[in-house]
Image (cartoon, rainbow, N blue to C red; front, side, top):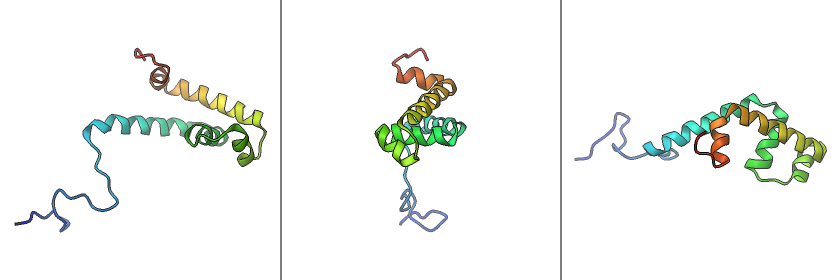
Length: 102
């Protein structure tokens, strides 16, 4: 006898396109949501620079070309954006700097 879920699929089977997240990953998901919320506070330009420089790992020159601004502007937006993120996410900042007292 096969157990069926309410939707008619086999119970315990994950539908295509969905991912099962272990309970241990809940903290990581909360951390990710916190970072995304903090990024939303930045200006559009700061957010673009942070994403391109640090998440996409692009060089300053390439980010400047993509955003049609100077390399100095990229560095300025990155510095201001990172400062704001450190202010909004002190526990994350401490973790990244190796300080476990956060």
